[in-house]
Length: 354
Image (cartoon, rainbow, N blue to C red; front, side):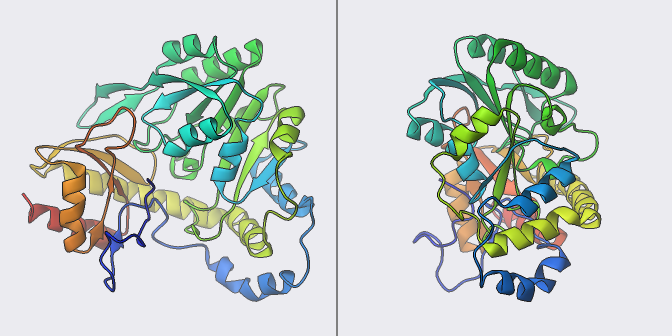
């Protein structure tokens, strides 16, 4: 199950839904995207460069890297799927995005599960990365995938855990795959794993323009792959021209717009805090989890997520029940951080159900 499914039969036909199930930027893409539509149409009249040299240069410049191999995909999901190639066993952490498990199984890779640690903080609960358990499990596997921030809760790895994980993977010859598709929301205080991309190790850092840049319909993701051999293994099944001209043009515009990036990160952080505080005042909310993403994981009191989803659909709101996430229960739901007026509308709708 994925968020953003406004097409299935259980969604009201002919009604506008405010979609809190999909974690896409509610403010839309940078202004430059619309401005280059005609330019993109012109590019579409000829074949793209099969090596996408200019696009890869834009990506490396954005990250301040040089010479690191880059793999491009039709969304981050394609990169995630290919990142398991060549492995026999991988460590996954729960709760986590369902495509990790699906992709590993698609590649015939066995899974060793390690569950996140839940702890209560100042007003918020949180999940934390179980470093020792993860390293123990990694001894018996060829690789590990971590999300930074994690979906559905939004937790990130601290500097010490990052350093320990990178050091173990590098010295023990393990593949470290990091999903950073929500990283742009995390803010300056959180370090990216791209800081390690120039090291000699088997590191794959995955990014996308879907979430942060408000372009879920433009399927584009990429991976920074430190080991050239791993990059070739991942590329092997890809077909030529797997990235269309529109996605290529839009990606270049998005990555170059630093003002947009700073503004969106600030807007999300402020509204995420306000939204979280408003949710915590509701009697039906047992706990809200700390998040560095553009979404909040919530545990309900005396409600099941599926039932709440049905009730809210009737009021014009779509949310994501997290009952199918490994490690979560029927009372967990995930709510995207939207525009202030939409967030206030959902809170008011929830009050009517108390």
